[in-house]
Amino acid sequence: MDLNAAGRARRRAVGMGWLWLVCLFHLAASLEEILLDTTGETSEIGWTTHPPDGWDEVSVLDDKKLLIRTFEVCNVAEPGQNNWLRTHFIERRGAHRVHVRLRFSVRDCASMRTVASSCKETFTLYYYQAETDMATQDLPEWREGPWTKVDTIAADESFSQVDSTGKVVKMNVKVRSFGPLTRRGFYLAFQDSGACMSLVAVQVFFYKCPAVVKGFASFPETFAGGERTSLVEAVGTCVADAEEASTAGSSGVRLHCNGEGEWMVAIGRCTCRPGYQPANDEGACRAKNLIKIAFLKARKFQVTLNLLLNTPKQQMNQISYCLHMAL
Image (cartoon, rainbow, N blue to C red):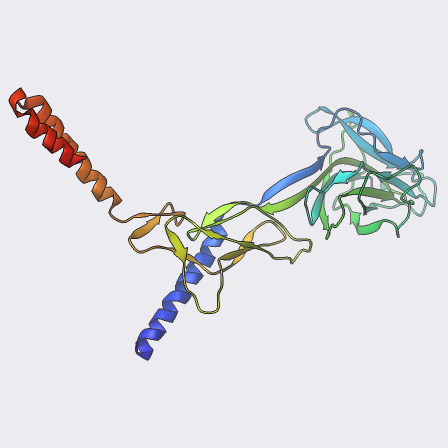
């Protein structure tokens, strides 16, 4: 092979790899698996509070005037607030990193007449890992140290009053994530330091990259990694009648699952074996002459059927011979 031909071959290989990488943007959406969801909960949730006169679980009406359970705290008249709310034990179910979606409302400190100078419009999110459901009323200790801080959550919008039904008009939605998780499960905790707020809903979830067939290779469902920038490698298997394409410097067919459960960074590729052609958007390989063969067989059977319907009995031996040839 001359140098020009070799160069053209390399450019074709690079081009095919680039086309497959572009196709990755059209793969199935990430999977979101729920670990905890209090949205629309109507029965008692029963999380642990410390001290007892801090957070309070109450029933309120949501935007659709349906009764739901929320947690509220509003001890703004007294300085030095340190109110904690702890969830039940949450099993991580294989997740390396989890995301927390919070729906909450916060009262504007300036809209209240009797407030301490320490009035806040924020609260803090923590987590604590454990192998078992070991928490008591006093353990883990209610302070940062045993608990790992995720973030201080501030409202984008605060409200100054509620309507006649007690429904809050302005609602905030914030998402935070943390990891890597290494133990069987964890607790979440919410610390209030002097806000007047309502925690309306808590969702805890994690991402997975879905099982997918692309580029004539099958990849399994894969958990997202423990860091935001993690790329978890998944090894693919060529589909039936496909084989790994020989590419310089590559070994195996691989995709990488990012922290948001999206496939990216393809390495290697499968192609259809000689005598087979692409089908189902690079999801399968089929014999090149399969349609032609099927058409010819159908035509032979039609000829045989016509003979059966129009030929006298004495020519049945000939018909049997034709039928044999058709099969």
